[in-house]
Image 1 (spheres, helix red, strand yellow):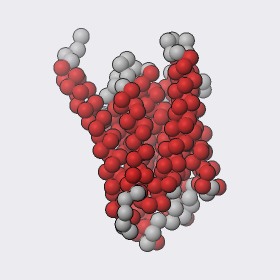
Image 2: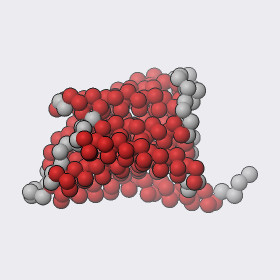
Image 3: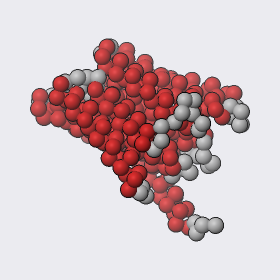
Image 4: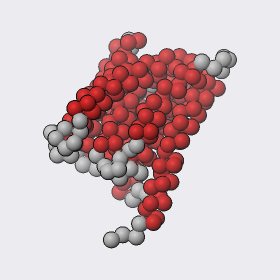
Length: 288
């Protein structure tokens, strides 16, 4: 459970920061403010738990410094509005490398040091491409909601894997996407259609690398950490979005709902059992 200070730092403040930026973007119809809202909300929650030094003492804090250029890439993708912006999702590999590199002298193999970041670079780009393609059929609202579910599930799994602080960072990341989804809904209600304020590919450029960073930190820093099964399922869950996009019919909202449900089911299959196991372990622990 979160205490009231943590609720303020990783829930209330990221929510407010993201809401202000997304609200201004909705009002001004500025495309770039949506990835900015997602990144700024996450960074504000992280900062309230402690702004890390550069270079940080704790390797997990590279996630904070990695999120800064990742947010800038999301903004750049929104400003250029190029179809190939999904390639920027490969920054997930750079974030992963920054997090794994401090462990190079403490047992991480050379294959993992370079192989995992390279793999995540490819996965990040492919996922952002999948988001880009699916968005045309399911809408931006579903994209924002699905990515919020992914980050929320990732936060739960990491929080339940003996690395509480990184789990709190994940909660801030998930909460920051909430106002973005509301802004997309607001654009549909006021304009009658999505005006691209929260293009999924631009949000994905921010959310996918952050999710990769959370999972890498949760896998390599605690003992035991996030299992490979949970890692793979959570990281791959956005790949289900094109399946929903392929559903027949003219109702975008129906395909969007199916997209969110598919992702939620995949995330829930690993997040719920992991959380329940952690709760039982905590209840059975009576202390030293």
